[in-house]
Amino acid sequence: MNLKQNTRRLALAAAIALAASISPAMAADTATEVTEARQEAQIWTSYALSPYLKAHDIKIIVDEGTATLSGTVGEEVDKELAGEIAQGVSGITKVDNQILVAADYVPGPASSERSFGEIVEDASITTAVKSKLLWSKHAQGLSAKVETKAGRVALTGTADSDEARALAEALAQNTRGVVAVDNQLVVDRNQATLTETVKDTGDDVGQDFSDAWITTKVKSTLIYSSNINSSNIEVHTKDGNVTLSGAVNSGAEHALAVQLAGNVKGVRSVDAKGLSHS
Image (cartoon, rainbow, N blue to C red; front, side):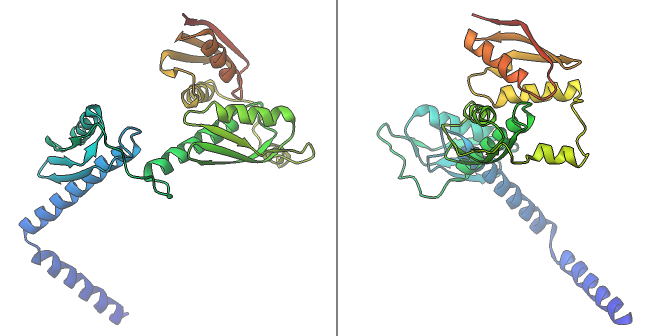
């Protein structure tokens, strides 16, 4: 016991001595360096996630609130975008935009490894597809695995009907960022699905979904889906009856919004009379 206490006391004394040896100026310098590194990382991450800048090799140096940008891009708008992103980072007071614009600039050959931005995009697509399948009242016969690479979605696993298999492909294909769907789902009418297994164990809560839950899932489904301008659509739910209002660009978009809303678990009906289109 005494040995442990003495060891702790020695460790505490050493920590106090080390802290005392660091001057306030050194501590301030360290804090500044950490802040600047964080700002550089935030700007770089934003570039890596931008579809317009991720292919460019832009260098960032932050010093006392000034972000200095260098590198080469092919368009003036890309240079301006890089500057605006950097200026928007908290703590950046000035942007020294030294990026060169060369009309004949071609980014270097793509690496065989996926970039950070591509990994994030693929993961986002996978999550969106999984969510849409999970929320769908017509996809309960699915036991599907979703994988995405370069915007190409692969569906593997089982479906209990041809209709469920086709629906899974349609929901995946209509997701933002998806360029192709490889539907490898196998129809197995005797295969117990995850939903059936849950019901058998008595853990299923039935079909009682709150109006708030339904509204949230309908909105999210519209946001995740391509060919839908979800920002112009309002969603309200009462007793499972969904009302869509706002504006869409075409009759096809109107029909798709109704179809997607009606596909969500717990939705009893969809009233889209308030959803106008040109």
